Image (cartoon, rainbow, N blue to C red; front, side):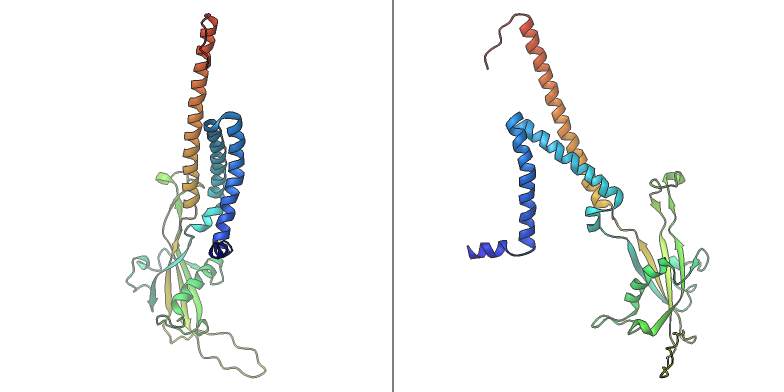
Length: 265
């Protein structure tokens, strides 16, 4: 008994699961009980299931459209490091850098796109405690000098309907974050700290990143489609029952009009 009480008091795993189970049994079970007592167990279950699945389909559609709910559990978009190049980018043996700088657009190092990719690049440039060897010991040893971008265009099927939400096809989007080792900074008491200056004798390090679009709306899409299919099947079963009931009433009315006695049921 002490073990059971301890397990039920273990937050948040067991207690959270119990909250969900009790809520489902209370809300869905109470609706089914009312429908079953008035319409029968089978018809009441179909009506309760149709209402629940219809609501879940609507909720899943909202999650699908706005990227909310279970969409947060799906793989999120982000930058992934492809390769780190030391020195001249045009001489790098990488398919993404073929023909550099043709087709690449220079970005402002202070832009939002660069700020989003810099933390990923720093993770591959700065050595973490106990981690693999990296070119730098800390982020203060280098400075961002240049950034470039290529690709990322969206298009519709066969090049048509190039507007949202029909432009579902994407080209690979690359971004280059180029850093360089800084010159040693000498601090003078009473004077402001000098701005880090890149060392012209040090070769630049370029981190080539690829934009991973993730699958943010995959889980809501599967959830919505699955609930929609089940909702359609339940509604179809209700339609079949309505047809059978209508045919039975028509047969009974025909037998009554012809003067035939109906058997006692």
